[in-house]
Image (cartoon, rainbow, N blue to C red; front, side):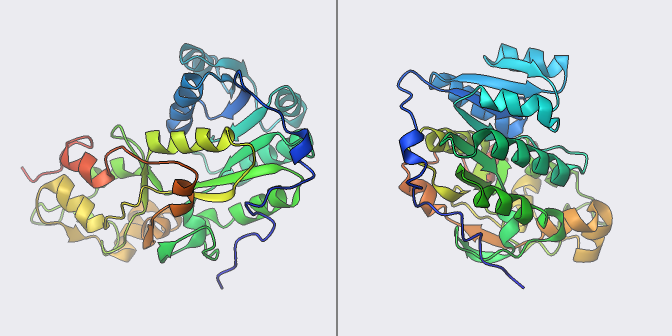
Length: 317
């Protein structure tokens, strides 16, 4: 049964936190997880362009070198180690969490990050942005921040983590991106590797009628920075460009011709049921709340990027 979004997470300022906030005329010292990742690296670029100092916890020397080259102060360690991560958080003015492990440990990873943030930031008024995701709401043809929760299995764990954050005395914003695209990367990059049918036509996930609510990674990065620079948290905010093409439309642009549906069970068998079920969600939204904050997405839509060749070509040879 669909559940309403966490009631404690609103855009109403918490008076108890307001007196403890500070002005950052000369930029903030901001901790950014995932600074070398797809979303985080773009957020890092925008933060640096806005004059902020960025502390980037990373897992390896190679990642540290990459983050340093992009202008961050890299610190090698494990953010799931509370004894290491909590003091690191205590030494910054704000934090943005974009890291997302690809090894299936997301629930444990985000839970550990949440625990450290609550311990370090609770009652301080320091702004914290947590990255959620649109899938938590399930299917909808008009997604907003008030759309009830109805998550597929792959993201059902997010609700518990976000509930704990919302219940804490945090200056909290949860950014919920749609399917992120840009620079030929992200989930859309997998469209061209789908199987062909017996006539050589590209197949598309599920029945192909589902809409994907999307956002360009560079537009999304600007939303994070706009939120972190505000004097107050904004609660939950959807990061959506307003472009909601169907998977069939995306596939036809990639193939420059007709495509065929792979079918629900075939997609579940190929991709794994949890991931396929998320990709088959029919989701549309406009991101009006984000726009009310002064955010204006300007990059090409996913469909425009595909037509321009940013995701290669799956045209039948």
